[in-house]
Length: 149
Image (cartoon, one colour):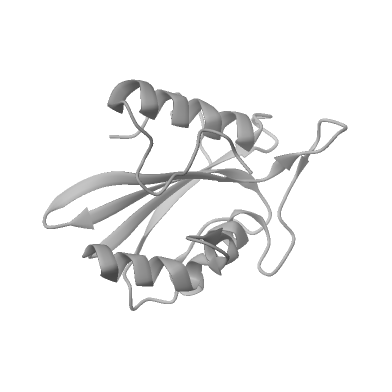
């Protein structure tokens, strides 16, 4: 189930990722926008939210900076951002999926900062983590803390 606070964002989509896919090939997130994403694991016929993340940070002047390295934007954060240590997700996720017996990931993303909305991805991510923690009594298993880096 998707958190209701994401309903206001219309620039959104999702994609599936299997361990033998190329993450940069299947990822359809924008290369020039910032926002949040939810990662659901598909395993043994069950779906579980396992990670809440974001791309984009607030600068000292209050503006939001899009990720510029590699592919850029949210796509770059999803593909080349670090997870499980200092390993890019394009490598770390397939290894972790095989270790946990996860068949596929269903990754939903929302642009939270654009011409229609000016919501900082860090703030939205924290709101989503707080919401998940309040409902479930814990964080999604691939999240380490309530605070963004």
